[in-house]
Length: 502
Ligand SMILES: Cc1cc2nc3c(=O)[nH]c(=O)nc-3n(C[C@H](O)[C@H](O)[C@H](O)COP(=O)(O)OP(=O)(O)OC[C@H]3O[C@@H](n4cnc5c(N)ncnc54)[C@H](O)[C@@H]3O)c2cc1C
Image 1 (cartoon, rainbow, N blue to C red):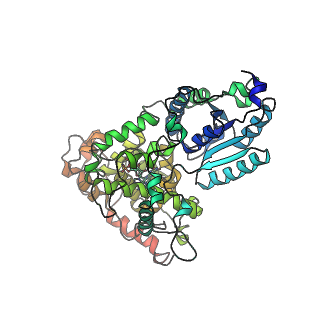
Image 2: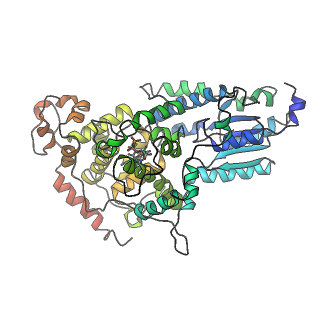
């Protein structure tokens, strides 16, 4: 390629983060439009993250598969994705420096992220790029309504703390013309030119004489490194796989309200892992499942499902407006609760050796697959906090280490909900009984027997009764008595005053 000629034309970088797809990608589309296809893709992964205490090798393995699928989708259209090891600040500085002969990029685009860490980073990187005379343009992508768009109608426009009024406001906006537009078929360049094999007209090799060491591609090295830590099965990754999952789920959507909580049936969508990486957005799902016209009062499958999607938005919203939740309880007085449950109990919970069959089944499924349904998450989390009296933040971190869909906002929000410490949460005096939960949601113990094989020969009744003797199955007795622990848990919160005085 004639670099002198090319040099005179603007080119751009699309910085991928949690929008790992080519299809219907707003900021990528904008980049392609403004640069007439002279766009290259970049992903920065800082290998320091590998030692973070909320890191998950399984999630990282799935992320790598997602990146590979994205790379393929870009290459099909002549595009490129460079995966580098480093902080975006230093990487962009290096790119601009090394591209000086060719000419610096005119434009960097990215889709907005709302986590506290990401917002700080994006502010910093934007200032840096602007200082280097690079335009920065960002787009809304993974939320239908960004956190600042939903506020109380009151004068001060303060944020909601509770889900119900937030939901009402969200649905009202959703039914306005702008809400409709946001879930209408995408009209950007990546949709219009999806079949264009030469859509991308620039390669990284055009920009640099030779790729500098700091900007060399590290995807394979990351994969090799991670494979030493995780080698289990993974679900299919990427946009096409996510779309296929939506198509499969469409067949059982009508039964969602009934089956979503029954672990033996797997009646939920299993889409969270795709949302997490941005293989898919809520808008795709709302379109594909025709949820835009669902009435607010609808309590059948589609209505219930839409409201679950809105829970996801609510937790991003909460983290955005109340970033303190990342550090601990939303309700200040519950920040220093004195948890008596120690390491031994915590380890038994992690390993699924508590002697409570539904809890052990859940924890073993989590360890084996990286996913459990929402009801089972609530059961095991409640048990850890209210029966074992272990600090909920240890459970929150363990979930991040295990979950394939582990995601700060919904994980933290849900743990706070269960722990009764959130802005909207389960009242502390309503303590769920795991034995009753097991009976209600796994009456025939089909799920329990799938994951706790040593009790395969036991009658379901025996697995749902706290007092029953299960020792002949070589299965441990429960670690403690639910009614005793429940009283202790309530006392623990009560000592800090009633929940209403926040
Ligand atoms: C203790 C605990 C920890 C959790 N940690 C996470 C997490 O790290 N990442 C995560 O994505 N979800 C988390 N959830 C929420 C929820 O359990 C999962 O999103 C859901 O089980 C994913 O499976 P699905 O896609 O089949 O869900 P479906 O029931 O099919 O729901 C569809 C989508 O709605 C959203 N959704 C459903 N329920 C919730 C909820 N309670 N809160 C927020 N969004 C919801 C998810 O995006 C989900 O993919 C957690 C829940 C609990 C109780």
